[in-house]
Length: 311
Image (cartoon, rainbow, N blue to C red; front, side, top):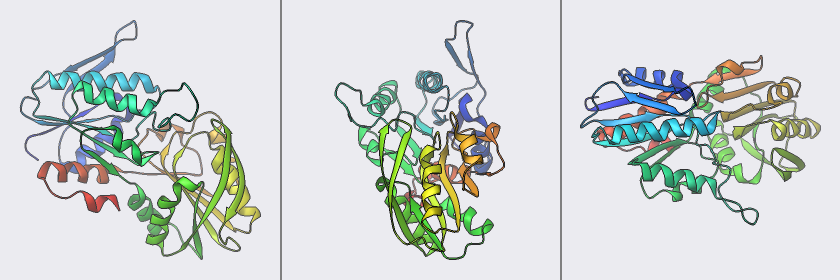
C-alpha cells in the first residue's frame, strides 16, 4: 500500500501492530510520552508529507489522556503536510453521553466529535458506536464498522450450539441481536429493563422463548457487568440451559471481573478494540478485530466499497 502511513498512539499498540501486519506495513516511527508534569509530548520521527495517514487510538483508560494523545498526534501530522488524516478509533469514548437525558448536562459525544474535526481530521473509522446516531455529530465521512462478523466467525468455529437464541440485553440492542441471529439462523429474545442510575441496571422482564435453549447475549460494551450478570440470572431462571456473552468492547471496570467469574455465564467473548489482555480471566476469550479494521483501511485507500464490512 504505497502512500500510506500508520501511526499508533499508546492506548492499544498491540492492535495497531496487528493492523499493520495485516496490511503488510510497519508502524511509523513516533515518540509519544509525557513530560514530568503530565503534559503529553508527541513527535513524528519520519516524513509524512503527501501521505494518507491513519492514526490508531482506542480511547481507553485513562480516557482523557488518550484523547489528548490523539488530538496532539493529529495536529503534528497536519502540520507536517500529510495528504489526508484518518482517525481510527476502535473504541469511541464518551459514546454513552450522546444526548441530554437530564437538564443542564453536556452532549459529550458531540464535544469529542467537534474537537476531532477542529484539529484537522478528514475521516473517522469507528467500531460499534454505543449510539449509531453519533455519526451525525460529524460533518466528515464516518466509517462505522461492526464486530458482529468477527464474533460470528469465532462462535461458528469454536462453539457447538444446540438450539441457540440470541438475546439483546435492552431494547436498543435489538438490531445487533437480529444481525447475529440472522447469521446463526436462530431467533432472538429481548430483556426489558430500567436503569435507576449510571452503571446500575434493574432487569424487568424477558420477551422471547428461552426454555431449554442456549442463550447468547450480545452487547456493544461490557463495563461493570451489572447488566450482563443480571441478564444471565434471569435467562437461567426462565429456562435457558446455557448462557454465553459476547460484546465488542470489554472495559471491565470496577467489580466486572469478579461478577463475571462468579456468574452463570459460561464464556465471555470480546474483541480487542480495548487492551483487555492484562485483564484476562478464565472465562474470557479475546478475538482480534485487526483484519476488519485493516480491510477497511485498505478499501478506503484503494477507493473501493466498504459497505460489505458493515454487515
